[in-house]
Image (cartoon, rainbow, N blue to C red):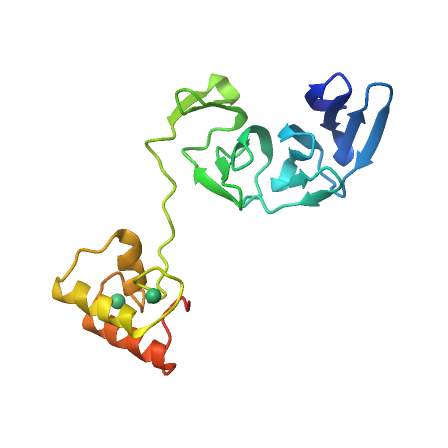
Amino acid sequence: MLVSIRAFSNADVFACGDYGYIRHFDGSSWSLTELETPSPLQCIDGMFPDDLWVCGLGGFMAHFNGTQWTQVSSGTTADISDLHVLATDEIYASTRQGELLFYDGDKWSIIYSPSLARFNAVYRDSESETVWLTGDAGVVMRLDTQATPTPEPCVHDGDVTLDGVLTAGDAQAAFQIVLGGFTPTVEEACAADCNGDDAVTAGDAQNIFMAVLGTAFCEDPV
Ligand SMILES: [Ca+2]
Ligand SMILES: [Ca+2]
């Protein structure tokens, strides 16, 4: 059984389905690739024939680079029901456990898990930046992606100047934050909070200085 299809031209068509089967039509005949997964594939989508994604049950996700398929961590074990690729670094997926997954070009993560809804399909409208989800029992959800930005992770590495290296200047910058000498951005404050306790104190500044000397470390070393 084939359940999903993506065509790039009359001579370049991909379809997927049971047993990890992916079929490709080159204009004259169909060839078969079998991915190593016990789970039936559920969806296939991509920007280009050499940048394709398939999803499946049990959180299965794989990417095709034009030569080979590689399994990629989806960040969930739920059954993935649908994919919508807007750009190579902007992809949405829905799951049967009511999760919305997002791929930022680097990794997949769960950005929304509103309820016990079981989602069957996802569509992201690029004009309005709205994500539509449909599910069992007539569920339709509308999500404004602008309203729920993915939070940046807080990195407690002491690199307050955000230049990728730890120097005495970082310790000095942390002291300035403690003294009220400047108001840090969230990213700078995260970096200055060397011990990761959600507060920037003189102890953090001192720890950053000791980290420069190599006698202490921040929670996330540079
Ligand atoms: Ca620095
Ligand atoms: Ca701290």
